[in-house]
Length: 238
Image 1 (tube, rainbow, N blue to C red):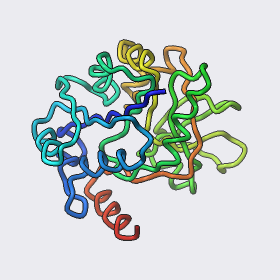
Image 2 (cartoon, one colour):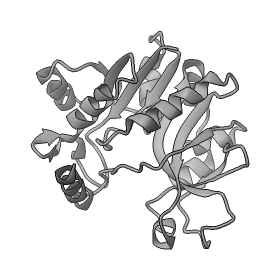
Image 3 (tube, rainbow, N blue to C red):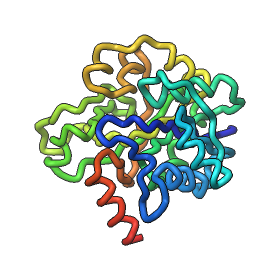
Image 4 (tube, rainbow, N blue to C red):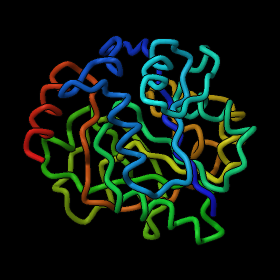
């Protein structure tokens, strides 16, 4: 199977404007994410997909791969779907531009799920560490069935003793077969997707299934200035 990583990137983040241009130990976050994806050696190619000339200039400065998209997209998946139409790849992995620490073994497990011809879309999840993490509305929860297919996603705090229930923390890395990605982008946005601000709800609300893959790795999503400080501390420990 031919595999490509596409990293959707935009500057206009509502919670942390221009975060992908911020430097993490001297290197812009989007460049760290791009280089981390390359270092996994999982993909045949890695591209950043963006409408930003600033981000494109950064990629050019390191001879990095990029594809320019239009600016109207509301989600990263919709952004990469625009360029995917012209790509000849079997598996397309959507890596978040604001998560510079990419775990090779987790990505390998994710793409290996597609050896099963029934899997059309897959994503990552891990166990919650404690109730505080579970009840944090910034953390997306996923409930799965006995075969680890998603039943629902939500940001709503959930009362649970973390035992005897299949609730996991969703790690926002998505993998698709090419035709599934294009199909996803053409689906009408659902009320729940808009309410929860979780794009994969569109897919399951239309009666589809997402294969969830367990991992022990969480990474750091840089959504706020405080997250950037955490990322700096994490990097120093490596």
